Image 1 (spheres, helix red, strand yellow):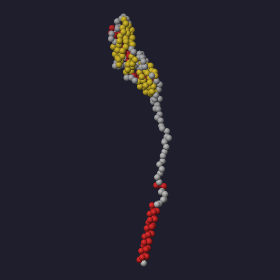
Image 2: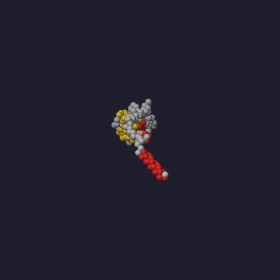
Image 3: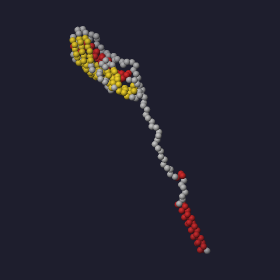
Image 4: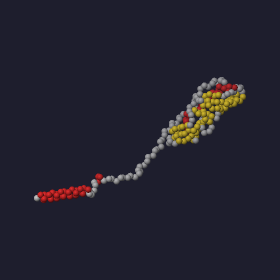
Length: 226
């Protein structure tokens, strides 16, 4: 009887061992497909973007207001009396014409060595230095004196002018001007011949065009494309 119990016990252990081995093998060799949630996804690729690239638009500028009145003629004071010495009257005449041509009243001195004796009968030719607002230029004065009358003339290759007058002339001559930039100081002495003063004009369409402003001896300004 004891022997039978021992055999049964050994048999039971053997069966248990086989069962355990079978479970282990099944677990290690399972070929069940993995769940779809655990499968790696293939990398996606996208081609180049076909969206249009925006382009910058050209800005439209505001036009400068056009002058409605002529450029003002400066009021020059300090005129001598009609019976003042000839030299004083000539100095004032030259100073006045210089300021009118320039476009603005400013301190002006006229120095012509020998002018104080130019009232003697005969022809006189003198060299003069005119200084307008601190800017000097030279010229020639001719005087024809008679016992009771005298005529005189002053000529120069240069003229003085203020920037405001030049800009005003360009603005009147160029349509649709939005900005005007002239290459000059607030007061300039320039030749009355040649190209004159360079001014760049930007139009309302944002286009830049160069112009030349030439100042004549009588103060007129001629504007033309450079």
